[in-house]
Length: 248
Length: 71
Image (cartoon, rainbow over all chains, first blue to last red; front, top):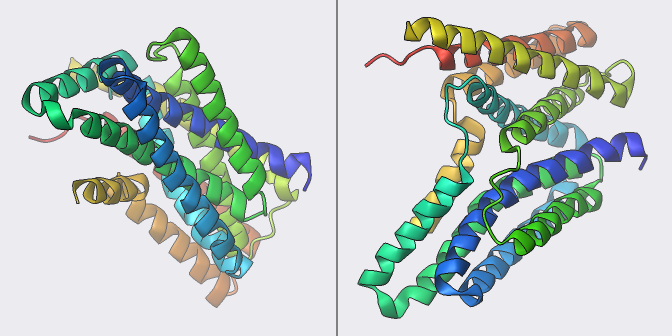
């Protein structure tokens, strides 16, 4: 394993996890604020345990599949997932889709739990725990996919998992200190960056799975990332202009 | 059961959130794969076609997203 192969995988896992953990943290914090840390911590721990089991189960299983079909399958999935993220981030940057608002999500989640408190007071701790579990599970699914996808094809499952765990630890540490939704995290910028990296990985591995030997090997990833970055920026600028024209 | 449904929805949304983009990318990969594997197309040209195809589909999808939806 060299840094040139491990660094992009670890960075992609770290940045993607940062985005998703910030989103999950907002909901867990809403649960903790309204119902205390116990149900929030139990729900979070259960969600993390389920996600970790998925990585531990799927990682070695995927390792048994021959490398070419595995690279093709993972490459195509990364392409679909990465281009989807990049598209959404471009449209958000262009002002067409509203930006993710952690404060609004926190308020909505708190209002939802408050409403349930009036109706089902006795079961509220259970409901709060399940809310935290669901948030961690739903947001974490994307992280698990990214960790497995960028980690399995090159035997980088452990470094990619460590990248994701580092993001988790960072968000929890900062969130624990400030004790409010991390709405200042430039979520769309991170999503844009991760979309660029995953799309580049997707083209690279789809090509390798199809038997294409890229010139410059891993360095081709940098070129692909630069091209997707350029396409994302052009798409954002043109989409912004188009939306202004359509609005007039 | 509701959570399982939400998990399934999340998984589908992860890869096929934008149906048109998903179908076009899959078709591009299938065409490039067929050209390289069955017709003996130069793999490097196939790679270039894959890359340019994906970039074009991406920009097209963003621009489509910018257009107002028909009522």
